[in-house]
Length: 78
Image (cartoon, rainbow, N blue to C red; front, side):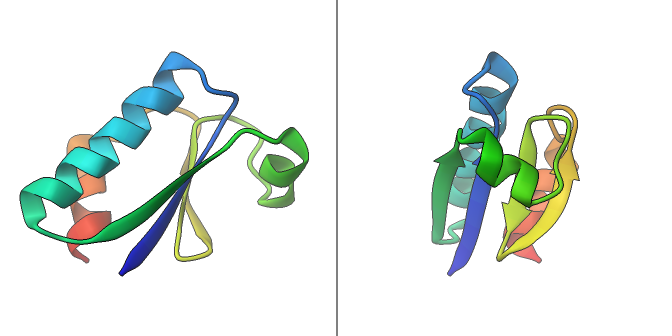
């Protein structure tokens, strides 16, 4: 199972990012765990200065905007 964390203060872009990851996983039939991180100290601990950020299995894979659909599909299926 892949573990995703969406880093951000709960803004609309953060919600859209979390929804995109959930939807891509469902479409691919892949089981994931998704956690939303809103604590700024924890977000900065990942080195993310611009949200939303995405952490996949402990590694930052994206920050600074809503990821493209093809990126999300690659994270889920890769």
